[in-house]
Image (cartoon, rainbow, N blue to C red):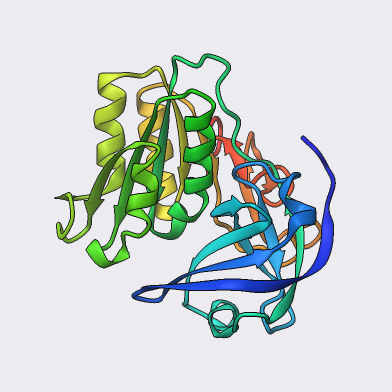
Length: 254
């Protein structure tokens, strides 16, 4: 994987308001695009001392898209930007998802909440490379399910919600367990909140399968210096910003 990184001043070309606090910001960044791998992230200037790490939602022509939900000062700053406003963007950073060598192996995406933000790019890339793609997408309610039309272009999509307002009522790890029972020979790629990922690892361990997991740990620097984004793997702390954010589920304990 290329280690080429950039620090650029990038203008906002478009901001899409999806409702319920969800936005997609499209920034012009032609220097970065050809170096991006699905599952990587960038650090964005966010109106405060620390930059904000965001996964790459999609790329088109010379633009990079970021899907996010407003829940703090950083994302509120991003949602307040107007077309033409420029911010500093640093990256691409981290290790992304790896498509399986065997193209008969289905790419099974498991997303919880805003963890979906990294997967339209992943699903399209897998689809265009000849893989069958399935997406299992869980959220609190129907209003928290975003980009369904985009995902449906490239995948077989199943949704599940905490309140049963879309799909059936329950958790996305329940759909995963059903998929594994039916077919273990699928390449699992997951992202979501920590409780969901912990349950996902338990399901994978139960059925002796592995998953590629993108962790949403808090990142202050993005370079592996501050040690704020660690998880326990193989009995030691590893940094999700450098060894990840995508890591194999094997021997992850926290």
